[in-house]
Amino acid sequence: MSEMRKLTTILAADVAGYSRLAAADEERTLARLRALRSDLVDPAISIHHGRVVKRTGDGILVEFRSPVEAVRCAIEVQDGIAERNAGLPSERRIQFRVGLHVGDVVEEADGDLMGDAINIAARIEGIAVPGGIYISRAAYDQIDGKITERFTDLGERELKNIPKAVRVFALTRSRELVRPADHSAPPRLSMVVLPFSNLSGDPEQEYFVDGVTGSLTTDLSRIAGSFVIGRNTAFTFKGKAVDLKQIGRELNVRYVLGGSVQRGGNRLRVNVELVDAETGNHLWAERFDKPVADLFDMQDEIVARLANQLKAQLVAAEARRAEQAPLPDSMDLYFQARSLINKGTVPAYFSQAGRHLEQALALDPDNIPALVCMAQVHLVTVAAFGTEDRKTHFAGASAALAKALALAPHNPTAHYALGTLHLFMGHHDQAIAELEHSLTLDRNLASAHDFIGLAKLFLGRAEETETHVQEALRISPRDTLANVWMDHAGQANLHLGRDSEALVWLRRSVDANRNYPIAHFMLAAALTLLGKTVDGQEAARVGLALAPDFTIARMYLGTVNNQTYRAQRDRIYAAMHDAGVP
Image (cartoon, rainbow, N blue to C red):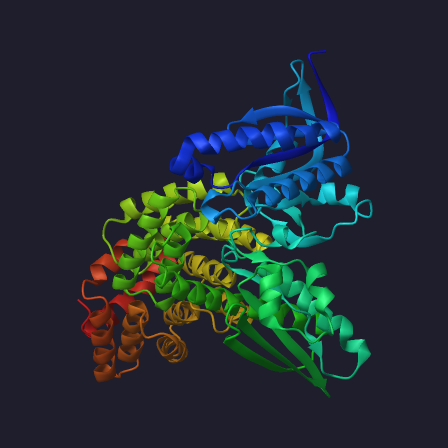
């Protein structure tokens, strides 16, 4: 046979920042790299019974019969390189990143290897820190207990072009492997969730407190681009007095999240705080005080609310850091754009956000969060009736999402945005299916619940919309988009002729965020329909101050074809016109 399958261990390694090193001094860099290979790398591979499958300039792919030998080889190489780097300035250090995976491969007649195991090892290597050794769960299970070195559980990680998330562990045998030798800053959105304290004095509540901590760790790791220290590592700090800045340095994270749970009678109180690990400053705190119902349902609700609020808080914190960066990179620009969008759907904010995202994608065309965010900018421009050229924005959103999903097929936010695209293109049943799929990938996507309700409004089923809005608000009551959801509930009530109920929802929407023009126009309609003409005219003026180019005609271009929807919408258009909307 010309090929055969086998289970093997794959080690992938390359030089971090090789292009920068070569550009600075190509001749010296190549000479040092050749010396490292001949004096250190190749002998270590031979001693540990490895076989070089392929060399790629600054990289290498090696097969080992034993995962234990593969890890020992990686440690020997990394320690040897660290010794050779001692005393060198950071800009001249050659540092390897190493990724390891155990899996099934196909061996060709010429000895070349193919298969997913190769790709997974390479992708794990790609997320490793310089000087680090990252391994998959499959490799970890094989070496656990067989070597003395300690591992940090980094949790589930989405890897580029790998369909299923992979659990990753980092070797932390020495400080050099936890923190890069050049003392580079911790990764963005990097955090540890410390075990919450049980203040109830009741040992039976411990399982609930630990459950909140574990679930929150899992849910926060789903945030695009986040780096969350695994539960097992975090729980080594349980019950200990800790220095948060020291923890930040040891684990190389920017943020520390901690809290406490206290039960008294039939009520439960949860306190939580987010701390900047570098400065020790408190960035955000929240308290939940609720009657005790089903503890597991309550755990899910608390975790969902925390995860959604933290997303906005972390984006704002990263945006503040990015504003101070002398040379912002692609992710710096993404966070600045995301922060602007969170302020409200004012055209000026979205124009500026779009410019940031264009710069971000020029620096890194494969920046998945920026691609999804760019699609959302296009879609919100359409949804807020900020353009008459809907086709161009649909095309822009579609192209961005196609690329994002090709890079990360299971990205929940990308699927949510795709559902939104279907929604505004008039594919309402398809939109509902896509939005429901996004919720299977991330149960905390509160906006997906709301947009399912909006899709049903477009289908002439306005009576179902408010239930979906209520579910979105239940799991994320202080969401940056909560005002939009309230507006949708208000619109649904206007469609049903429940003008007084609509007025309540629309006033809540405006109070939550005054920078959403549509809510002001809908409020103008509700007030006018209730005979409050002067108040309706004032609401229209406020909306037009935010969106001077808005017209009813432009809104009509986005009206869906469902006859029930159209009939209900006509009275709203008439009321808006009576209030002074052009």
